[in-house]
Amino acid sequence: MMYIFCMLIWGLNFIAVKIQGTEAALEVSLFYRSLIAFVLFYMLLKLKRLPLRKAHTNYGTIIGFGICNFAVSYLLLYYGTIYSTAALVTLIFSLKAITTPIFLRIVFKTPLQNKIYIGGALGLLSVVIILYPDLHTISSSFLLGIGLAAIGTIVTSIGDVFSYYNNEKISIRCVPIQSACLSQRLAY
Image (cartoon, rainbow, N blue to C red; front, side, top):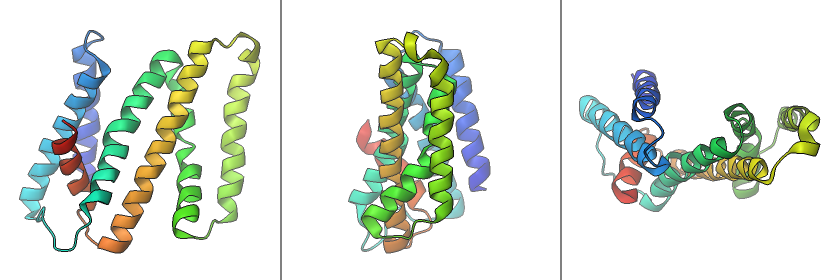
């Protein structure tokens, strides 16, 4: 059920952004995406009869997760695609598979497996291979796009650290849903 809701949210989001065109600000696009997510996840909460309020819940980490993963990172990645290419932003964002385990290692002392090092090296190598042919002609605005994508990826990884904390310490199955709902309420 959760997978269907996520697919519905992302699919409707891209349709909404396409219909909206380029005249609206990215912040407006992000607001629409968050509003659609909020409505669909709220309906899911009601359908599954999951409570929004739990005793001993650290709402700061839930809100942190929601704002990092559903607001700030998306905005940075959206702006990154304006200044560079969407393909490169996607490639940079895929480095999240490396940055998240590293941040989890730093904050929670979780073990880092060797495959993270290998995957990290291959991921960085792929970014370098993509950029290398054009290194002498890269503009400052293109570099800005790369930087925004990198910061957006790091912000997402920070949100993933909040998520890990929420899942390990709070042990609530609906924390991601709560995060989406709470960050939507607070951010806008």
